[in-house]
Image (cartoon, rainbow, N blue to C red):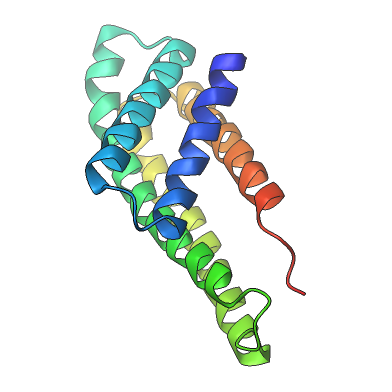
Length: 157
């Protein structure tokens, strides 16, 4: 369980840090991101119990899904950066708050749509029970990431 917490915390940092700490060398962030992605993949592999045939079909779909989630994570990182830039300043007026809220909701809708779009792709290479298991694993990881982010991001004043 400690390994899971470390991986999830690292993934949360990978979402938030690029948006907030733009002055860090990109190469170091990219190395950290790749390491955490590899750790997440190991975590998924350890919990999926895939046959060789299932693994052959699953991992390319997994990689594509992670790439799509990465785009959503980048949007979320930019949203967090925008919020950090205006937090506690007069610029955080109703118009800005509405814009931030609209983007947050759009990201949530896009995440659900992405997950739904991958169900048929996953179902083509895995039995339904393993598709459900994988999506549960993903959901748990993302829930912990969101919890970590929520605990670090202050409420709108």
